[in-house]
Length: 420
Image (cartoon, helix red, strand yellow):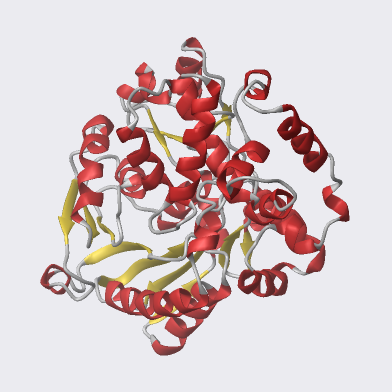
């Protein structure tokens, strides 16, 4: 496709994404489904340009003010992520000169909001959590694309063997610093085309998400519940921890998410997983299992603000009112999940949020109202799971992962045990 036509498509796609009517990944996927003539490189350029705009939207919009023409085209011109030399052919001499002037501006001289590129409602709680000194490093990390983390399926192979198998197919992977299951890949290789992926030796899963599963400490022969299973990334990790024994329930209210688990489950080799769609956290299936479960992982619905490296549109699609609604839901789900546990059972509450309102506040309220549960130190569970330097991953008794400190997505987890 001619570069000028591709730039027009970038403008069209940006217009759709910046409407924020749906998640950016869904909008991009739908757009590509309507434009099947696009090749892999063209799709990559369009998608990466869109995500570059989303990550630094305030900055690009500020710089775009000095240009002319439709705002979406100006944003695409500034943030273009394709071949630079070919791209220059699509611009007029005046447009090329304008782009060079705009990109030559020293960003450090601009106001703070144009450097952190976060909505103002989010700035205050993050500064309160991190302090002024760490706020900007965090903001920069959140605007930086994440690497690709993999979890090695220990039922099928060892980490060193999976690493060697990927290298044989031209993909260099390095062990993750914290999770003993993890491998990290820079860039975006065609992982799904590799034999290692097709065999189920590896699954895509952020290292932080792997640590949540390690905290659960699911064991052979136990009854375990992944309460908000989604597409099942944590379910698969828990099943492997159980060595394909016992019984692992994967509950979720969204059937389409559980449908996405089916091909992953087939690759994994697991036969101890029982996916089930529930109507709500008080579903009859939950009541029948009350007091019978050894371990429950509640990866609660949340704002997802810890995943901004991967989903930068979330910071523009979330709002304080939405956080308030989530807090009510999180507390209700956690209380319902707690009923499943037998005496001595382990409860893990986790989110991929950066906000104390969805994390520490929810955990503290649960501890206050559920005297039959005692708090467990996350560091102890991580040490038993052979996680190096576990103390650097916790704050008090809870797990607290920050992208700029730990190189993971932002995660929180609190642990309890039901008193005998």
